Length: 394
Picture 1 (tube, rainbow, N blue to C red):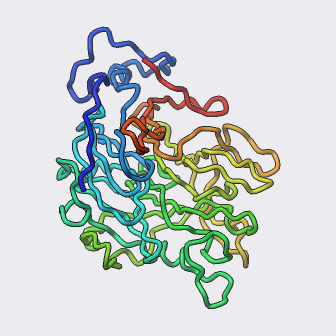
Picture 2: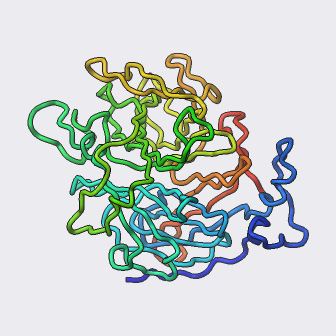
């Protein structure tokens, strides 16, 4: 059944980057402009301070992606994808997902949107790939419209289904078990960016694990990120078939990284790379394990290469590629872990020059029943204070 929606008006004009003039008398941001950014701000200041995602009979927002060149925004609402323009006007939706559609990113190389897609009961995990030019109306079907293809991730399946206690039984979708290697609950955060340690390297797809919350085990205190070179993924793509999930995908990842943060509730919810700062932002749900700082955002310096070393908490002295956290923000003396107090768990996307849209989710009862809604708010990264971000207002 098609969702009902109404266009949302009132946002300011599209950016000057798109060749659309700013409205007369447009106010500049109240946050100070970094030195040397005068030219870039001529376009940045014309981005709307807020973009509305609409209200939907769906799950809560999971992630966002932005096509800056063409002025489109993509919003994942767990079981549907919503396409809007920068005014918040709805262009179309893709619906009918029976799994969990998570974080998104836009690939400027091929003009498509990539997102994490989970089917835990079927033990199938994919990167869903959207041919977004075909999204032109509401209620387009995830399987029958020819919009969605999927690539199967074998490494994720192997870690998710690992029988870690060796009792011959996989305990399934629960965190209350010793099963699931690294505490893996599947995948969520996705982002394109260069290989860690290579500032201007070839774009790779980074896919972050979800991690179950379990305070009684010691092997779930790392964020896990898989790296894929997708240049050959055309051989693996298959149409989405939810009744009969396919297993076409790369046999293994190109690299596997570990980031020691302490256990978080469902791992990296949102992963985002900002080319301006060469930083990777990890938005998480706050953990609760004693002895850890349990922050809501962690940041990795993309110019720092991973090093082979023992992975904290893993049995048998397992060695892997470990990434250091950015040594800024709020330090935790006992563990040496640095982080920030900033909500970046349901959508964070850079738009250039240190500016980001960050999703804020809320319940909308204006229709007479509860619907899921979100607003994308404009922020600037400063790295200062407890949050590291400063909100931009008009």
